[in-house]
Image (cartoon, rainbow, N blue to C red; front, top):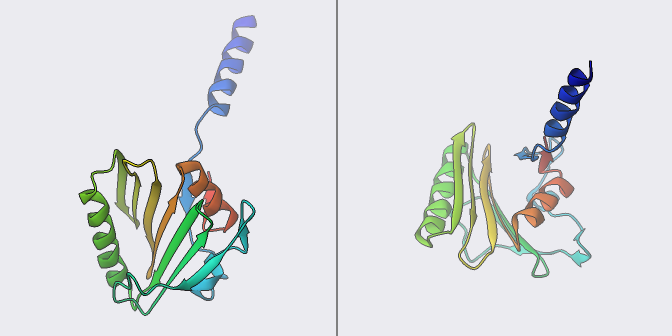
Length: 155
């Protein structure tokens, strides 16, 4: 009987230690690109402006900053195919920078996560005709923002 309890306790501990992952999804109430920028993140107010530096020929492009903690670029395209083409452009540029760590997924959504040699972490992902690039001081900062902005949820 003791062995059963020990085995059950061991399994519960292993389950509780499982590392959480992030699943990104767009909130259905998302009306404009401005809605993805929360008012404040880690006591840093948002500064949002039109992205004129890297438009990727999108219908609309915005960039936002929360001090030096995090920056978020968002592009809205006419269709999914253009968003995926923009994704390939951004991911290709990051690959040329030889990141020290990266992961790429192209199932359902396009997603590229990386850590630059400088230690800056980033994610590039698509959701329908919207393209996102988020850069933060580390992976945890990005994860916290995705959850706080309701762009992502932990599973």
